[in-house]
Each structure stands twice: as C-alpha cells, then as structure tokens.
Image 1 (cartoon, helix red, strand yellow):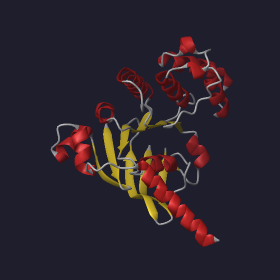
Image 2 (tube, helix red, strand yellow):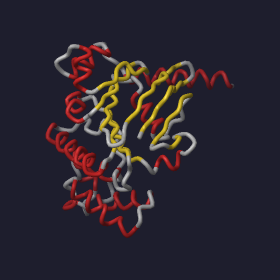
Image 3 (cartoon, helix red, strand yellow):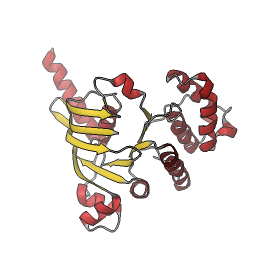
Image 4 (spheres, helix red, strand yellow):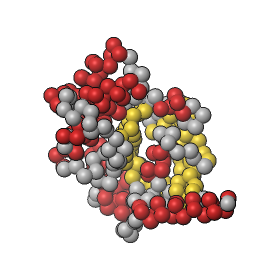
Length: 263
C-alpha cells in the first residue's frame, strides 16, 4: 500500500530525511517512531504530498505520489498533530464540509457521516459546536472526518498527544476496529511506546533522518534484549534529550543561507 525507496529531503545543507526505504502492506498498522526532530513529520509531509522530496520515490496504492498527487490524495485520510477542525461549526457541519471537499456523493454522505459519528460516540453531540468539545472528542471527530471519504490509508501524526489514558485507549480501540472491519491501512506516529506496542503490527524507528531498525514490537525487543518497547527504543536511539526546536532552527538557518546566496 505504501512503498518508499531511497527517500531523501534536504533543506540546503541540512538533511532531514536521509535515503530511507520501507514498505507498508495493505491493511497493516504500521508505526513510525523516533525522537524529536528525527524526520517523522517530514516523512509524513512527503507521503501526503505536502512536501516535495529532494530525491527518491514514493508509491501510494500503486500511484506515484509526486506525479499523481491529486489521485494519491483521494487514497488517504490524515489527522495532524495540531487541531484542524472549525470550532464555530457543529460536528455534523465539519463532516459535511469535508464530504463536499472530497466529493463524497450526496446519496451516501449522510449515511456515512452517521455511521462514523456513532462509531466514535459523537452522534448525540452532532449538532453542538466543536469549540465546546473536550480534547478527546475533537480527536475522535478528526479521525471520523478523516475516514469519511473511505480512504485506503489513514495517517495519524501523534493523534493522542495530551489525552488521558482512558481516552487514548478508547480512540485506539476505534481505530483497530476500523482496521479490522474496513481493512484501512494505518500509518501512525506516537511518543507513547505502550500504544505502539499494543496497536502496531510492525514498527520502523528513525533517528537523525535514517531508519535504524524495522521489525515487529516483539522483534525489536528481542534484537535489543529489552523487556519493553521503550527500553528497545532507547537502546536504538540513545538517551540524549532531543530538541525539536533546534532541528527546526537548523532548517531555518539553511533557508536563510540559501536566500542570502541568491541575492
């Protein structure tokens, strides 16, 4: 469903993603893990056509993500780290707007919206403004919205960040149900190792722009002799605290340098 080969993204002299290759099979739940600034979000932005790679190839459902970007966008749904709902609209209106944007046929739009809002326990709140929702409710709505156009792939970029354990558990229960019943391929990132251990069938760990390991959760533990996925993660990436802001600052410096050279 996803095939990446020799993918690289450079910002001037700074290499954010360095010649990575991996594949994700149809119906698989695949976790992409790494420290802050390791290249996770840059990779997702390239896979979802928001950012052009410097080199390498990407296929989504057999389509070239660079040359067939419009068709590729129809194949996936995405939930970003930052909220993207319109708080002044109701839950139902947010779903309706997404349906129109993705040209979901009117005859199935209402049925699909009701199905997903019921699945994520939001149907009774469908006519309330989203700005009145809790963080967990907003996240559930974002995932429901991302699935409205029946995508083959769902990208989840740290979808449970800041949520309480009960809400996190409920959200992943819903995602696993959709994966099993509709065959949706899930590509996720998270800093909660227990989530990846419980949900993902396979994990790739990226550090300093390179994939340093790829296996099942149990396989990663066996490789490193660790008792938990968190211990395995630290063994593979080290225990030094990473500063994501520093990585972003490096990119900005490179942009500034490039701009200065052009003047």
